[in-house]
Length: 275
Image (cartoon, rainbow, N blue to C red):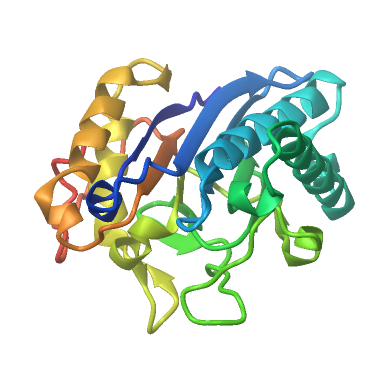
């Protein structure tokens, strides 16, 4: 059986330091086992709206709740391919309602908890992916990577969609894949999109990902690597990254591949020392 090794980090953008704002990103991941003994990697990233005063709490609530929904689904004996778009939309509605209840309990408008949401459940051969708003999910195998969805933008420039909006379920992107090799998966907030994507071709920038996945594949222990997660956070806070983006940054990386070679030199941002 293949085992997942993964890292996660989220950190405050330089503009948030300048404007005395908290980090409004959240990232959460874990490995569970389904009724057939198959390991499933679960992960979620949420990016709180910069203009919303409590969006970091919305992001924290959203990532925690969606992983709970996924884990409960598998604990009930269901399998990954039984997750449907209707199921996901029901979860989104429930999470939005719970964030509304949180906002009401504090006497605050739900708009102040606005956040995007990206989530996945994957095995080495199948996966379920969904997201509302910008940020990106990237999957790959044998050194090739591609975004599952292209980041969602709203009606106006620099705007996007949030799970807290009244009709958020209508904006949910959903995809399920079967019988496809999934060795590597990444989730990130929009603060890293400019480093990780080619916008002209709508493709993933492989040199950004490959060195990090290569290093992660060298780990002998499965599960979350606290040491490499610390290294990842240091990379996200580094000058070479912060000179390219002043936004909050979240990144989750996971691999089920144990020998990953042929690393490439990074272009523009060198991620060879990220982990």
